[in-house]
Length: 301
Length: 276
Image (cartoon, rainbow over all chains, first blue to last red; front, side):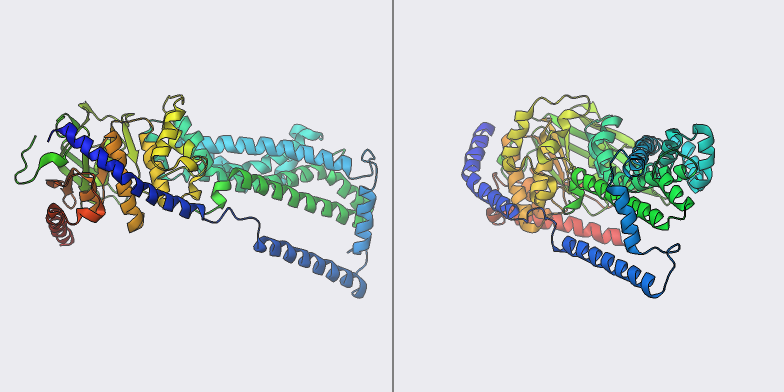
């Protein structure tokens, strides 16, 4: 038999066999169609917020009772009602009023956001350079850790000398605090790329930047988001610490002013605002992460 | 063309064109381990694979068969000997070679279509041939899953997407490194059938590494048996079973049992030697 004849024979019986293969395929397809759809927030998460709510109620009840029955003086621990009053007087006011929370909150938030953007952006760029180059890693890593082991609050006065009492020093300290977690996390995440994925890109003759952009960066995304999650809270912290050292406006100023007139309820109210803000920032980073890194949250491989 | 006594050569469809696309001559390789020792992985491997031929390589664990494949893919270096693809010495990864990795190795952040299209948009290429990608996906029965993410696919479907990706640049040569090792037995047989169908449709030159004797016989025009480390070629056996083959009928073919026991005997002797 000639080769061609053999091929023809092979392909004609291949055709006969086709339905069988297709049936097998469709069985498999049907099986994976039947796979559970991506899970919606289910009982576990609802239970989580219920538990958190119960905890909050219990805490406030404990607080009320402590103030009532242990007779804690209001300049140590104000009653929840007093804190609520202070909160209300800051919220139920014209947004343009200097006595409200809106102007200081805006000033603190915008400085923290700018610092966060600069610090985490720098962290990502330097973390990437360090992950890509052993030379850069050896050169920069010791300084990164030296910087991190310094108490940032102790550097703050120096930063104020350099950048003045305006927004510059707030942005700089926020950036300083946001920088490190993103640097280390992006470095770690980029280095954690599976060698098989690098091999894949090598086998396709991909350039270094293509490998970085298509494989390493998405691979590091869960790490980077963990860093951003920390960085966003640190940036807020940095902005407020800077305001303690001297500022015209900001939540740090609200706290120091309340403290200066022994308005403990006012201090508490400002702290509540900052706490809520911290939670909001954290959960918006988490939400963004779930959108961007959706593949890491649903079933492995 | 070799004369194979007592068996018909009809099964080897590509023998007529004797141009060898893969040509490995006395290749040796020693690499250093992390603990400071040396591992002699390959010792004078010779292997020729003709255009359009499907060759399966079996051998004991750690015999260097994956190393051989990585060398052909341009991912590993070799110490001595020559390694040529289509008469050109291997100097690095080549666009003419598609690699199918163990466990699919899809990128979880890309959809199935984007994964399969990946070879067309890296390495200085600008993607344009999208219809081809959809043809490939349709051929592999993945047409309806193009916009899904890998985690939404079963293991068998993921590996089919991996094969589509390796075919995206329409390479002459397909190198497959234990592609179905992670699948259950039934899915694996089904994938073997599909691979046979794909290969019969486009006649790539394939070198496939496997641990499974039945897979090797089912798929291969030839089965190459390698020795325990340092790896070399122990036997190069023709598979005289006509295509298309199916698992139902292949076991009744007289050549099947004879080949399987011959390969098993060779491998068992090697396992014994490796454990001495």
